[in-house]
Image 1: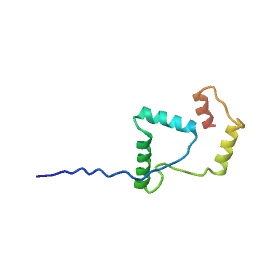
Image 2: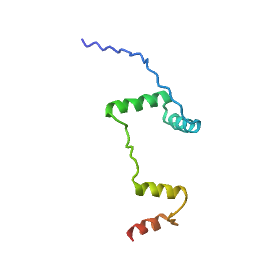
Image 3: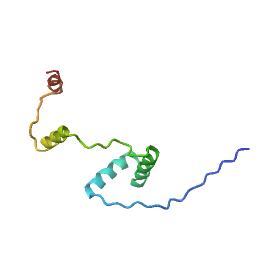
Image 4: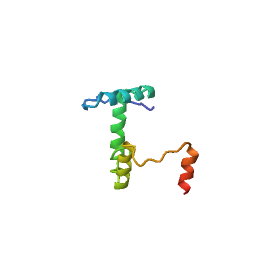
Length: 94
């Protein structure tokens, strides 16, 4: 005879953080659409950190070229504009 026991481990640790209200609202809207509560999402995030022994996504410091491109794009400087996706793809061939 196989006896299965389910033992509920009490969750006693708390995580407190401060975040900009706009980011919180946007994130919680997405979580709601996914059927997740903020607590469930944070628990999933922490679980993945523990399992992977690091963040569950790449975090990189941009190189100088990428940093310059990001600054230029924010200032709408040195941008190439295209009327269609085909024009964009054609520019890659040149």
